[in-house]
Amino acid sequence: MFILALWLGLFPTDAQSCAACFGASDSQLAKGMNAGIMVLLFFVTVVLSLLSVFFVYLWKRALANQSDLPSDSPTDTPTR
Image (cartoon, rainbow, N blue to C red; front, side, top):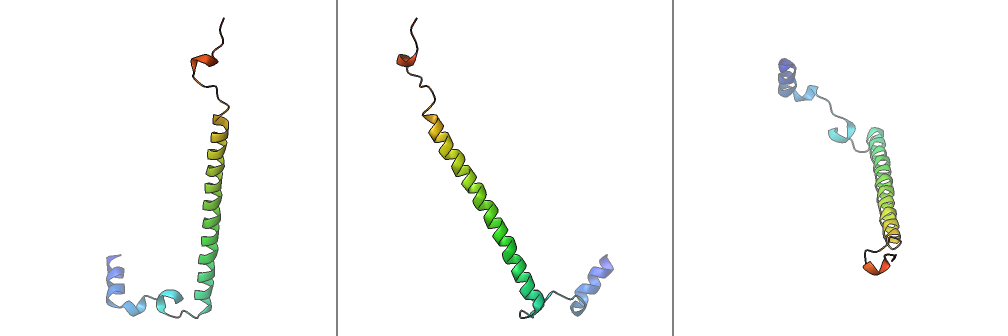
């Protein structure tokens, strides 16, 4: 492993990069990679949005049900 790392460090032309890193930004590989990144960002955005909507729903539901709970005041307790 050390010899391989040394070889790649001494001769960097042997280590090839992808189209985005190598500089050919107009190639089909770079366009496909950009489209893939956008699709992944779309799904992450949708999942995080749905998660936040779910927590807002739970918060509103908790506030609505809070008024249904009996209060702790002594006038609300039944007398015998």
